[in-house]
Length: 124
Image 1: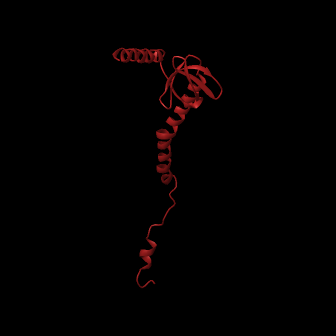
Image 2: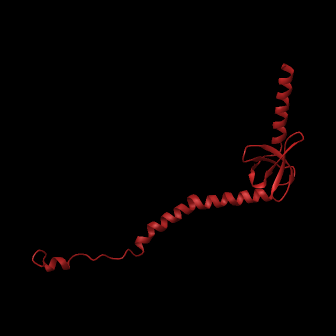
Image 3: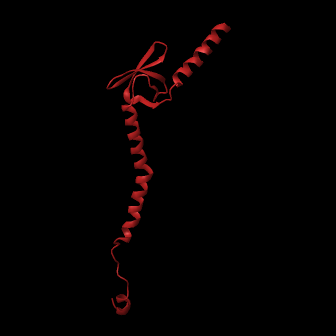
């Protein structure tokens, strides 16, 4: 085989080296990037949701994942009883509560809907 390739040229070819530390920097940087972009914010939201579930108490104004606004009438280990209008109650699972609303939101919405109901009755 030395007829086609000279021995001096074959000896001068660079050897393939193992990637070492330099080869690990880019994949490690990608993992760190994904941790701060996806995993950390998700775990932060989960922690906030658990704290909100623990702080549920009678009288709190909440919105469910289905968009129902109500006032907490009773809290159980697994269920929450919500007052959605005067003397109308629904029961939802505790984890179905999406957000706690500022105090007065429920009253303002009920007052607005009561006013619109009286207007529509007077027009008839």
